Image (cartoon, rainbow, N blue to C red):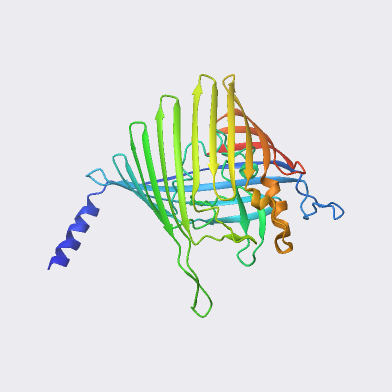
Length: 371
C-alpha cells in the first residue's frame, strides 16, 4: 500500500510541473588555418601529410530542455551535435553525452556529461574570445597555464606535449566524464565541486586489467565589481602515468593546481594565471583592449618550466621524452583580434607561436556566427 501511495504522490508532483521549454541554439565558424607544424612535402623534417594551409570549421547545434515545478525546483538537460574539420580531417555530426541538472535558488546539481570544477574556473581560458583561445578554433589553447604530456597507454613513452585537458570537462563531441557536480552561487561567491569515476578496465574475457580513472576537483571564486580571484584543485586516481629510469612517477592529473586574478578597467582588461602539476609550472599574462565600439584585441604570453628530470631523460627507451618536454619548456605568445559584424556574426583573426625550439607558428582568420 505504501508503494502505491508513493507512486501516486510522484505522479501528482510531475503533473504539477509547468510546461517544458525546449530551445535550439548554436553557432557556425569557418576560416583559413596556416600551421607551420604541418607539411605535405615528404622531404621536410616535419612531414605529416597535411598541408600547412587548410580550412578549419565547426557547426554546432545545441538542444536545451527545462521545466520547473510549482515549488521552484528546476530540471534541465542538454546535448549537442557538431560537425567540424581541423587539419583537413572532416568529421560528421553526432550527438554527445547528455547532461542533466537540478536547480534551486543558487544551487545547481548536474550529472552525466558534467562541466567540471577545474574547467569552470574563471581565467583558465582567454577572456572574451569567441574560441576561448586564439583564432577560429583555439589553435591548441597554448595560453592555458596547465600543461601536460599525452601518454600512450600501451607503451612507456610519451607521445606529444601541449594542453591535453587532463581534467573533467563538458565534452561537445564525446560522452564526457559521466560524473556529478554541485555549483553554489551567493553574492559574488561561487563554489564548485565535481567527481567522476570510470569503470574498471577488463579484457575480452572479462578479467580485471586495471582500475578505472577517478577524478575529484574543487573550484572557489569571488567576484567584486569588475574583478575576480579564483583557485582550483584536482586530485585523480589511476590515471595513465610515466615512470622514469630513476623510478619517479609523473602523474599530471593528480595534484593539479590553478590560480588566477583578473579584472577590467574601462576599455582595458588583464589577467594573471598560474598552473602547476607533476609535468610543469606555467604562468600566463593576458591583456585586452576594446578599440571603438566593435573591435577588441587580446594578447597573451605564457612561460612554462618543465620538470628538469623530464628534460634530462637519457635512456634510449625514452629518448623522445626529453625532446617532447622541450617543446613545452619556454615561452609562447599569441594575439587575437575580433570585430563585431552585427547580427551575432564576428570576424576573428589570430596568431600564436609555441614554445617549441623550432618556433612553430600558426595563423587563422575567419568568421563566427551565432544562432
